Amino acid sequence: MSEKQPRPPQATFAGVLIIGGSLLLIAAAWQRVSTLHTLEAQRSIETWLSTNNLEGMTVDGLVTTLRVLCIVGGGAAAASTILGFQVFQRSLSARIALAVLAPLLFLGALASNVVVAAMAVFGIGLLWAQPTRDWYAGRPWLQPYQDRRAARVAAMRSGTPTLPGPQAPPPAPADPSQGPPPAAPVPGLRLPAHRPDVVRRPGALLAACILTWVLSALTVVLMTLLALVVAAEGEEFFAELKKQEPDLVASSGITEQQFVASFLVIAAGLVLWAMAALVLAVLAFTGQNWARIALAVSGVCATMLTLVMTLSGPPLVVVAGVLGVGTWLLLRPEVVGWYRLRRHGR
Image (cartoon, rainbow, N blue to C red; front, side):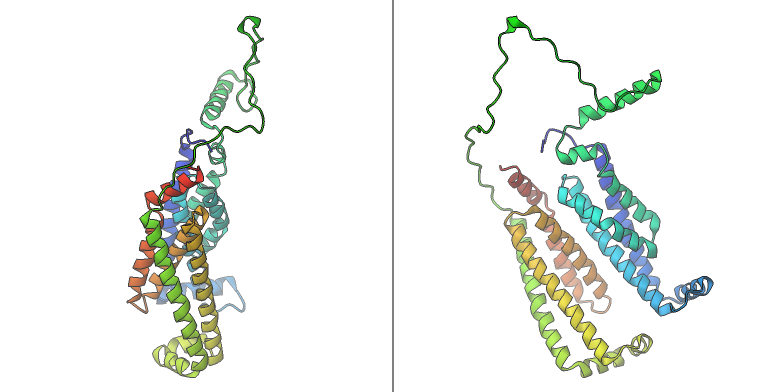
């Protein structure tokens, strides 16, 4: 890719829309989840159900659905916020990931705010339009874009249609007095290149990988032990849950077997997530930029999930802080610059 071409203003505007819309969607989803348990929200949902005559849907069921949609949308928005910063670095993998996250943003918008999600999705769409598309592909975009704009202005003034794209002038006839043209390079012939300098791995990347390895290993060990204990002592755990949250158990109608099965599924999911983070940290440490981006997205999602869990366990705010620091280290300028140098072989 050519580094001489500046970033198009359309790409900058798209990144601002993605980041701003995603942050607003996170706030809207958080506000929606925090008010779902209020009496006013319960009455509003009950009125909406009675008005639309939805058979088989209860207030509790709709509240659960809205909460899940908000969490999905908030997680997608958190990932889009991180990926939005990668737009300014011309990351191809970030653009593809944002296109995949666009439907999830709309899912979250159904339960929180459609307008702010439209901002982020519109910004994602701009990444695939000209001249941003040429900029991502490494093609010269500035001069062709200015030529196309000048041609459109001239066509509007003269009233005559013009063909899209710049029209190259016909080649000038060869002048015999100038001698023969220079010889074209021989295909397949490559000049010897200097040995690339070894760029030292940034300390911020090393620290982020170490934090990821430590936290992921602890998560795997702790969740595995908890799963074994709950599987063996499920009756005592369920009795303690009924003692601490009697209303929640009564309203959900969950049984002991369902509680144990749900906990084991959640524990297995967290273990798989932690193991995936371990692998991504290894790949990011070896210089895979896509793994760094994926690991940063995983860190944001893990931070958001831990912050939600702090409502019932305030000490978890320390874990959320460590996760946030690890994600911040992955986005440090020296880390981004190191990957850029590796990509261009310097």
